[in-house]
Figure: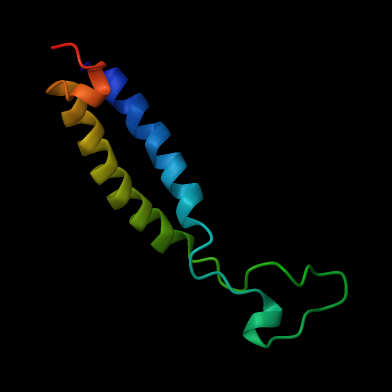
Length: 84
């Protein structure tokens, strides 16, 4: 696998994993017991914790990418269509 292809695959995997991890641990103002000012969205997260989620996303995406890389590199039957 060429480096450009590997970077592109990791980039796509990272974004997919990010969208899977974004809802983890999110509490809105109502769930946190806080009041909101008039005009503010009560469903908006109180603390988004994006740094923590980006770090978790990077680790999980690296594991998923490693699985994909080894599947492509070593020609696992379910990836290569069974042709070896």
